[in-house]
Image (cartoon, rainbow, N blue to C red; front, side):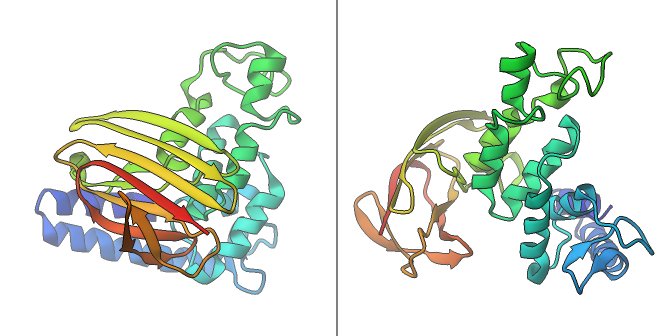
Length: 271
């Protein structure tokens, strides 16, 4: 679909095939436009399951949110609908459900789903109630009696935690530039060592909910970064970086610092 065309455009541009990149980009825009013309119920602000349908399933809304198809003015109602449904999908579908939530800035809700002890559709249920030591093919034996107990597609948090919760993703091919955009929800501390082709990225954070966020980052010598810090509900765009006040730009719930030089840095955001 549109997301595949966007990726094709990115790959073509990375290898210098600018005409191909432009054609893929135009095709992606056309698919996105057609998708929203046909499937977005603009009155309700959410998606229907198919052409002519009035029903709206979780899947019909989490996939366009995860793949960047939702117009900006409809992101909030789509995200609220997705949250209202919870995990009514398979462990495979949970990959895109969590991606959709982080894409919409709903990291707190995503963390609650990953750590839910009360639902039989959760990873804690697999470990504590079923007794598996490796992720299951399905949430529980009652959903798939002939399931196996060593399914990689059930290990969604293994990629969601570094990519979305800790927020480390490449923004240029080969990690030539990295984005660090933590969405840690209610967590008060955490750390990550992430190996890449250019070396290991190390980071840790300490948070006091709604009051302060301290982030330590160490990137390899050949890897500049774009760093996002929570704005904590403040209009100020100033951040302490290595003890000095620097000016960032506001983007949604974040203050963004562009072109952070490689190496060790400490960022502090306080009310």
